[in-house]
Image (cartoon, rainbow, N blue to C red):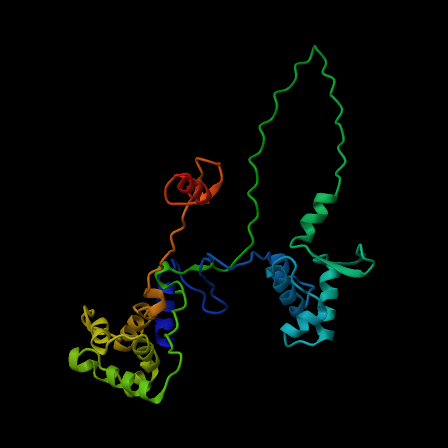
Length: 315
């Protein structure tokens, strides 16, 4: 894994135009797509804040609203003690990043409201009122023509912070991959099930000579094969799933077997209750008696039981 990382880093540095510095840090900046926080250099490179205060400030800025950021909550999260964390929070308060006030709730209890501002300087500038002065209108004598206005000088370029070298943009082909899915596990790995799964994996090279697994590989993948056997998969079906249409040549047989055991895992066999069709009892509808308008149950319209009895008695 270290060798692959070194090769990827070497390729990324080789694509950077211009010479690289002989000393100092070189930034390898991979664009973030999820789970990232924008932090200003005024905080990350603050000249008067301690490293602990900068780190806690960045951590608080990355948390969602409503997260606990008290001294005890931070001390439970980090290795620094409560005294160090309390001093760092006071530094953030001094420089305007953190604001803590005591407020009374409707039920009478007191609570601490914590507000974190990611740009204290911008907050102060927005609250400052700049007075506007009206310039006097110059009086021009009619006999003397007004001079033509002088051309405005070109705007000065905005100063850009000096950086030794721009960040290195890593190609997308070496961007970090999502974590792989875990190997399936059986509900109970009995000795008999483990023995059958290990024998099935060790026997794969008879059916596909490319799939030569070591003893450590078989021991590692045995729970995945056991999960298949526990779900009622036949050993021949497992072999076909693991040996059909293999890439040529397969560089990493253990990775191929692990991947197929994970993504091709069949569902558990359904029980007899799931396979039994549901029988619904037919419901006889209500009818209205044609003689007395009484409601009664019958598959067809007609007379109720009492009206039918009276009819037969009259007959």
